[in-house]
Length: 324
Image (cartoon, rainbow, N blue to C red; front, side):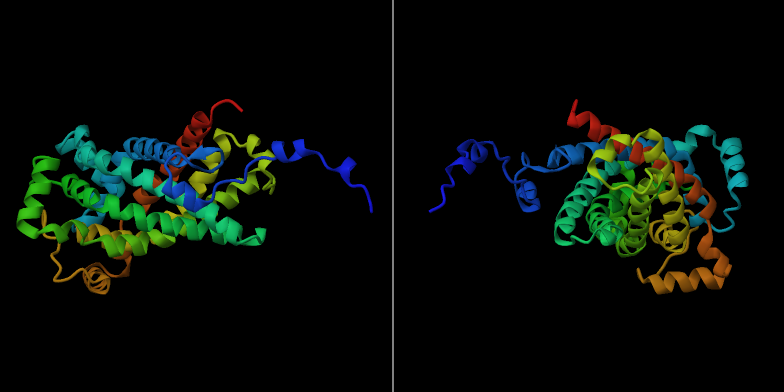
């Protein structure tokens, strides 16, 4: 019989690292670590900070986009900006920012935590590295379905407050009046459209971001190369992802804005939340070019916003991870 005792060391068993927690464990236990050395609540915290910084910094551009998309004869980007500054003052560009703050923090917390958990879970199921972009895209879609359920009501309030001559005094007044006059369903009138828009937006965004980041790092995907990631990499990859995703999904964003602002300040009122009906109305009134209204401020918003968001998110993750 062969003596195997020289090859056997009990200390080897004692020093073996514990198996990493599964995604299910991370979801069920707030203290469990998901991946990247962070716990579930830390992904939520990092995402919340990133969302607030992104939307606050770019809010004036979002106001311009809403004005152009929602109201007839909204004009171009420069004319709308000049009109607001001349007749309403610069502070009007920030009308509705409180509604955004109430919705963006929780929504982005859900958004990024679901993205990280989905990426971890799907990455374990799909071992082929050539399918990594598909994993990132699918994770982004799952994340946006969850986060849109949180953000859509406050997004509706935000956009109504952003309109020229908005009849609402503030967030509380808008919420109360919409609920009394139109019912709870009005807050989610655009949810289906938002999901249909944000699903491809997020798929393109996340896949482009991860691919651009790999390209900027020389095509490497090894864990040790993550140390080379810096502010410039995250910002550049984020800007590219935001711009491309924004351009692709502008028509559905126009539909979303029309549904959220319908019947207010001269905006069209629709008999249903049918995307087809809204598209037909826009095309009949403005032609197919109407579906691309606001594409310039939308891209001007999403390119720097994504750069800010991803940079803030990754920086927040690094801060929460602590010194390595």
